[in-house]
Image: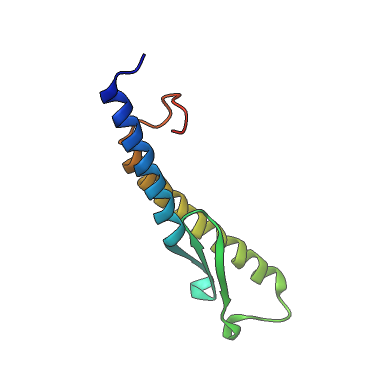
Length: 104
């Protein structure tokens, strides 16, 4: 049975996690490829919020290169968003995530 102090710590951790989730939704990361020809912006939940393609770098005859650049920019942004998530959620749980406790 959990004592009051432990319950208080769990409640605080859950509040910190909720705050971290809100911060992730408001945060943004930018991934790019092709020297900035393609730029993808995501929030901290890895949701794409914008995609910009510089028309100066687009060759209508080479759609495959553009597609590869878009995928690379998305991957770059996802990597940054995942790192942001790990940082925020690690801070919120005090490194105690994965203990099998509900809601953690």
